[in-house]
Image (tube, rainbow, N blue to C red):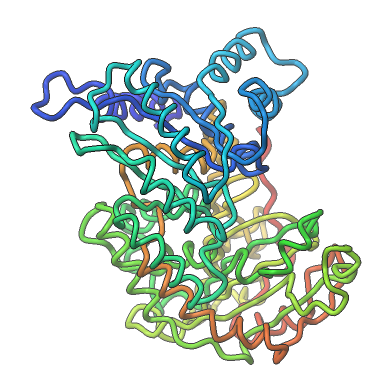
Length: 517
């Protein structure tokens, strides 16, 4: 189905669910207020507001129904906030008059409120502004919808949530709701995560809390359940009898780029592996859920996490790129890894003995995120083609979204010789003219709809931290040291050695080339 169909279907679904209740015997749904806390910060400018604009532009956010409030400590006017955001919505040069008009109309839906994150005065003023908007839209008290997006550091989540609970909630329940969206990192280890979860959980019920992990909004990640459970030929193959190893890889070709001080507090495992890559692992390894209901899917993900065995130090390689500590915001003797390869073992009937290799790093020789499922050797290799490489199913998450199956075929010609080739579905070629939505667009839309399928549940978060906290404490205590590696390389050579020990067989003489249009 093309993107046009996707957009029309999504729009009609959203409108039928949220905006048009004419023939249903349910309470009238009031207007929608989206409150971006931390509105003057980088995350809000680069991700949150552009996602809201794209939803508005595609008709998902109707100007007659929605109003957007920015809240932060910075003392600026409505117009100053709008001007700060404008450049992130469309290109500053070459924008058509239609685009510029669309941006201007969207920006008029934004109002700014200045206040502290731990004082009632600012939040009382915010509540007053929201209420005035709701009254102007003739919303019955208690029927309106309030979505609070916390584009803030986790340290201020507890006071902000407390202020929202005390000052900004819907006054009664007549079909409306109040929901909060919180960004990672959710703590630094199991204890801090549980403390944060408890503080927020005392104020809001779990169905009101949306812990966002933008990897769960990516097109190819969302395709995983469909691929696995809607295609017959994968069902008998997806297990320990056929699969030798699974790699989930995140690579960046740049360093910390001015975020050194922030990154040094967390490191690559907390920043990427414990959340993004573990969420992908769950979708690759989980059993088929009873249905597509969010709780059924999240139940299966938790079962996978609870089946992961403790990480062994011999199956971990840490690295730090040379020059990392040159950043003035990074301590000279920092032990923080900028690269890690971790082998996880899932102790269940489907995956016993199959290594799941999670690899993430900065300042490497390429930029990509992918899932690589490598199958076992063909028994009785009559073509003597084993040295060319194994069958692999690769799902490329970014950039150049694609999925392809590496397989051995006869090389064209008179000789009976074999070569590695691929069955390739490259999105840029197959779905020409279709814009793949940004992850944040999908996830904000899911929040408005009340669909928690692509958000992290509290027990899921806890189980993920239980896996990594012992390892992280050993690193924090200096018991494990990162190996230096050169920027622009593959990372430490020891990581490739660990891959080989884990059973991964490198394909020789084959490179996947994205097809041209």
